[in-house]
Image 1 (spheres, rainbow, N blue to C red):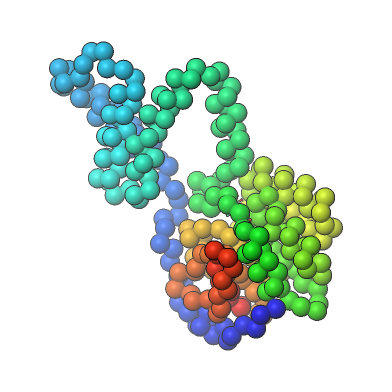
Image 2 (cartoon, helix red, strand yellow):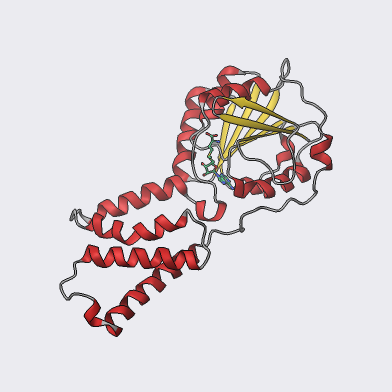
Amino acid sequence: MLPLPSTEPAAAAVAAPESAYPARVPLWQAGAVQAGALLAVLALTTVVPAAVAVNTDAMTWALLQGIVAAALARVLGVDTWWLPIHALFVPGLVWALGFGLPPVYALAAFCLLASLYWGVSRTRVPLFLTSRVAAQAVAELLPQGRSFSFLDLGCGPGGVLASLARARPAGRYHGIESAPLPFLLARLRAALTARSCRVSWGDFCDLDLGQYDVVYAYLSPAAMAELWHKARREMRCGSLLISNSFAIPGVPPAQSVEAGGSRLLLWRM
Ligand SMILES: C[S@@+](CC[C@H](N)C(=O)[O-])C[C@H]1O[C@@H](n2cnc3c(N)ncnc32)[C@H](O)[C@@H]1O
């Protein structure tokens, strides 16, 4: 395990870091923007009927709706990354309808995405995976010469757990995941690869972090402030918090480790 410098900076850092993100995804705001754009386009057709050709096709309407929605979102100060989503949402629907596929395809696509990204509108943590190089670097950071307990917060399909269980068999590995499909894959993988891996379905906010020697998180900037509060409340003295890529606002890590294209940030509690 790599030596860690003093953790005093982390312990003494700002006690209550604030997330730069609002607590909830403004889904209602996205709906309101699209509804507002629709009203604006409808108003245009009634107030200035001559401005719109009678035979305008569905895609032209959709593009107009998209442009108005993106402009409205911009005026309302919505995050920039939402603008292309607003611009392309209705044109995308019209484009997909053009294929004339049975509605069951749309239902299947919706179910697949929902089972992969379940709860993301609340947690703001989508699914993406730790690279093999980063998982190897995490293995190097685990305690040497003794057994230890490890938790992957939001374990996705369980790749990190499986890889660590192979590399460091002395550990007991636990993953918790709230999205159904990744959870099922992680369960299956754990059953097939290692007895030392256990996977639960649930929200890690409800899990006591005090049971673990090492807690690993690959989440998103939106989750980090709350995670720090929880870690400070619950993690044992001397245990290790590792975040892949995402910093805790106002709390410098005790150490950071480059791992391929990723950076592991470490806090000793
Ligand atoms: C970026 S992925 C990381 C997956 C895996 N840990 C890895 O490194 O390959 C984050 C995962 O955390 C899950 N997640 C997010 N918030 C969660 C929560 N509050 N409780 C349980 N799982 C959560 C998401 O569903 C997603 O699968």
